[in-house]
Amino acid sequence: MSLSAVHGTLSSLKSCQADIGTGMDIVTDVAMDLAETQDEGDNPGIKEMEAMILECAKLDREINHFVDIVQQVTSEVNTQQPEAMFSLSDKVKEQFTERIARLSDAELQSHPKVVVFMEGMKNYLNQANQESVENTEELDEDIAVTQSQVNFTCPLTQVEMVNPMKNKKCNHHYDEAAILGLIKAKQGQKKKCRCPVVGCGNTDVRQSDLIPDQMLRRKIQRHSSRT
Image (cartoon, rainbow, N blue to C red; front, side):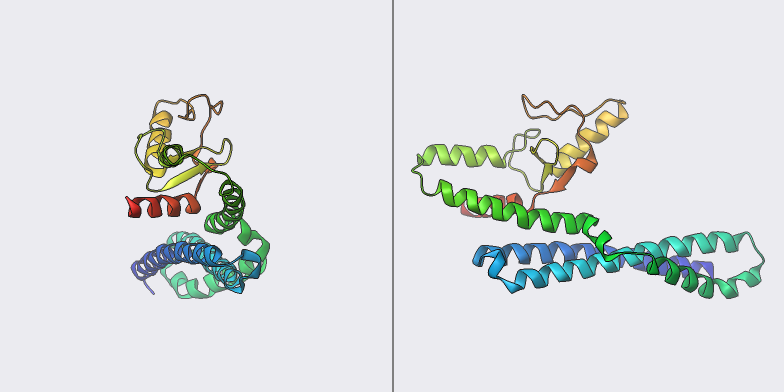
């Protein structure tokens, strides 16, 4: 096998990873739909979605390790005699088998999209309970609309968010493109990024602190479809 063929295979695997990521987003949306139609504890479909997203995370992890090993082995082969290419496949298979054997399924819980899934289901239950309490109270319609608009508005763009990201440290939300753009701009200036929400004491917003808020995104989409 030539090195160009190896690089082509790795490129295809990375494309597959993008498809896996899209599939995991769909699984999360389906789980949200199921949660809205039935209590999470009584819905076996949600457990099936959880098992499915963990399987996707496992596949994504294995592709990451495989690509990493192939790149390491081919780098070593480049410094050796051309005959070394004949053993490339066996070396990759051996190292991949050894590395996979050391992995734990418990580590899948830290996969970014698994975290989003788990946080989304947790947030849905919390928000559903909160809304059930709020629904027992009489709220002025104009006040309710104003509150909804504020919740959906990005503090940076001052327009309705498209892909809301939640800050794990201060619990504030921003549109993904806006907050990532601000973080990048501040990094270019060698400065820390302060939370743009007025009065917030979080003076160091980092990309690692941000997670997609699927529940809020769905609420925004429903709100937009009614307006």
